[in-house]
Amino acid sequence: MEKSVQQAFEVTEEYDGVRMDKFLALLYPDLSRSYFQKLIKNGNVSVSDADCKPSSPVREGDLVTVRIPQAKQADIAAEDIPLDILYEDEDLLIVNKPKGMVVHPAPGHISGTLVNAVMYHCRDSLSGINGEIRPGIVHRIDKDTTGSLIVCKNDETHMAVAQQIKAHSVTRRYRGIVIGRLKDDCGVIETNIGRDVKDRKKMANNARNGKRAVTHYKVLERFSQHTYMEFELETGRTHQIRVHMAGIGHPILGDTLYGPSKCKFRLQGQCLHAMTIGLVHPGTGDYIEVSAPLPEYFTHLLESGAL
Image (cartoon, rainbow, N blue to C red; front, side, top):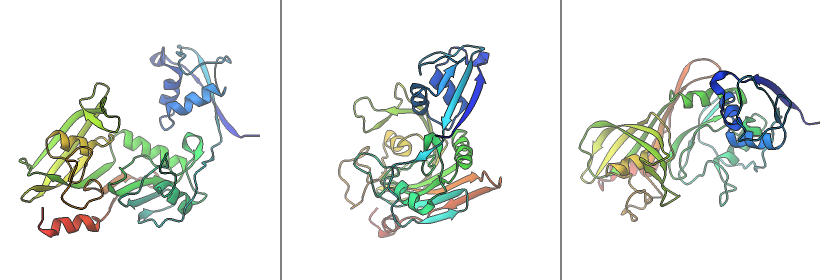
């Protein structure tokens, strides 16, 4: 018989009228609304012993009972792919993701991903968030962006780190080369980033349904036609740095999605590197900070004299 954890919650005034799937996602901030929609449809959620729908509003005084099944092994192949490990203990793994590696398996990329590699490396020590046992990855970096990425090995760590990400307390500093010579030495870009209605592959500034996105930047070195920069994320929206820099007329070098369609340098995607990541370790309470060295192609560009 499948093991599960069952809990009951009485709806308070502040949640009156909220959709059931949203209400549950607020109670369990590290589980997605789509996950709860499946639970509801499978009969794992009831209101005062009656069935409900994901869209059903909860009412003050309702007793909501939730049964969360034990996590199942994810249908993802463990692959013996070498990992560049920056930090590891029984709770956390921080890796330096190489250029060209996708983080999660998806149509067109079902193997060779970071998750495939971590499944092999961690074996039996993995998170069961959202009902599947898999690496707990609470933030992502693009396929052609290199650098530091946190992997959580268990549910407690996953939930604690996710809370830090949500509170914008995790340090995330990037290095990048942009096209053109930036005038200001430092600054802050703040927009609402959302899906581009004209091109679903792209994100856009000041989108109608966008979310607040804040990037702090400073110039490290100016070249004749390019600028070497550091970026610190206050928020972590999809393509945030790429969209913000393109929005002020200085797209990331090699970014053919948001910048010129052709690049005079032989690059594989954007010249962007997630260098430093810092967080409070959920187990010890100590602040830890790890940096991934710049990849060889990046340092070669900086030293080539061609910028």
